[in-house]
Length: 67
Image 1 (tube, rainbow, N blue to C red):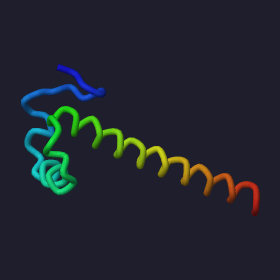
Image 2 (cartoon, rainbow, N blue to C red; image 1 turned 180 degrees about the horizontal axis):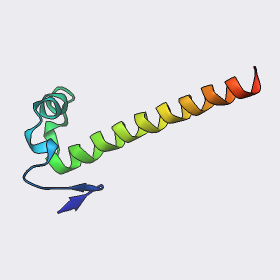
Image 3 (cartoon, helix red, strand yellow; image 1 turned 30 degrees about the vertical axis):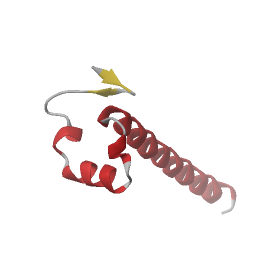
C-alpha cells in the first residue's frame, strides 16, 4: 500500500516510532486514520525541509552578492 509517497511496510519508522504516535495524538490527529495523519505529517516535514533549503540558498546568495 502506498499513500502520499509513503510505502507501508512492517519495518516502517511510522509503525515503531513512539515520537510519531505521541505527536499525532497531541495534535489531535488520532481522530483521522493513521494513513491520513502520516500524509499530513509528511507534508509538514517536507514543507519545513523546503523552507530550510530556500533559507540556506538565500544566505549563500547574499554572501556572493554583498561581499
